[in-house]
Image (tube, rainbow over all chains, first blue to last red; front, side, top):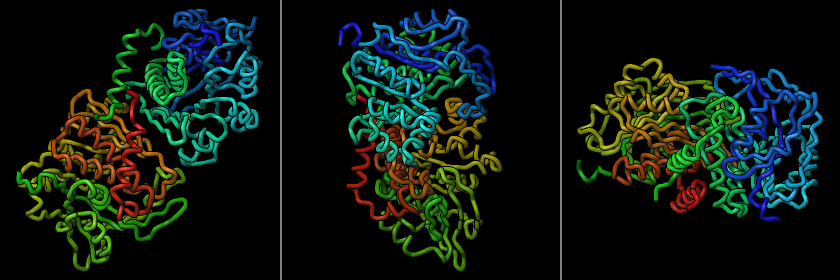
Length: 312
Length: 312
């Protein structure tokens, strides 16, 4: 692969405008989407290329925000006369459960990822949560198999696109899903058993996201298990995008290192995931990631290390 | 304090016979109770003295099991013609939530802890979950203030015995409660805010137990936070007693060290708590702790360390 893209990180996913209602506040035009959150979180760690689609209603300021985080938006397609994917949701009192009030796929319904030529040799690829058939299409469009491929999916695809999902799982290194999805995909209650089953489907490494309880890493070797907590926060404003920011921090660190799936890289990447997710939930949209100072990130990372550090 | 008791650990709590129903199995005469679980878990780490009460129906084999773990049962009172505290509960499919089907306090209703003279100079004291007024009575009965005092409580006492609870909290070093109890006691949603509020009530150190998600430690200094996961297990047979075994492992390690609440001691104690709880839930009652080999404990502790270890 060419040197110029060996530390690059390509993300393909949704770009959206959310309407978020929490028990305490509400934001009607909250820029979101998996690729957006991923890129805003990972942008500080590695140069990111973004593939997604928006309509003419997508705010120019959001594109500028991505660019300010060093994100290459050549792959962000705008549909003339189209509208951006819109989701409206309401969080319960506990800030974990949520109800979907409205979903308008708009131009996302016919999304067909188009990779600029300059993205096709990128060494690190993250396939955010979209139809497995589109994830396969992206993998096929790459000039060569990226060094590291990560993937997210959801209950819907496990349910209605299982065959395609199993196909794409054979081609990825890292799968990131939540506990419920891990149980659904594997048919196992115990996370240990679920991890064994899922890793036999293809990915050497499984990350199980547990929201406010952090995340667990299984692999790449059979007995490797690692757990990180979530950062305890004085206030959670909006949990939307936490998982995508975790993925962005995680993959961003792996891309920055560029030395593959060693145990040390994976463990440090888990910490970066947790740290970036913690900023995300402290505000609506990516408010807390916009203009985030290096020093603030470094300081929270240190705080996170202190929280996990075993006595010598 | 006298040397002979400087590494001893006194526990005062319930001794019970449970009837446990899980989605997959059932045990009708399952020896339980907070003090029993605590002593069986901590017994491998420090010499334990147990204060509790049982009826004539309490199985002699269970007393022998405690003694085999090095537990001093001089403080275990048997009420002539009395019956042991009995609890019957059913776990839900997720093995976390449970319904109480029956509670018969029996001789536990009029429990008044009686400390043998040899217990009164013990340096480490754990007040398991009983009425706060009885917890105060135990503290008063000690010849001197123990070096380390830990305490557990529950929603019921936060609710109906709040005044006594606040009195006893002023006199303890470590409070161990679950998330819901921490929120109830403090009136705060955020665990950070809850910890700040609870630590202002007296205990320098707060441990918030999170079941299958592990536990968090706040204190003894203001900014000290430490998190441990729970050990992922192939199969959870019966979660009853997990929190008490966590407390037993935690306090057992502190007593064994005998060097107070240093950050290193507390962090290592958290790991011992998590490890001992993991054995507990793999069987009914304390089945997995009875006759547990040193080597099996050491091996799981190493496994636990590997799961938490940060890259250098």
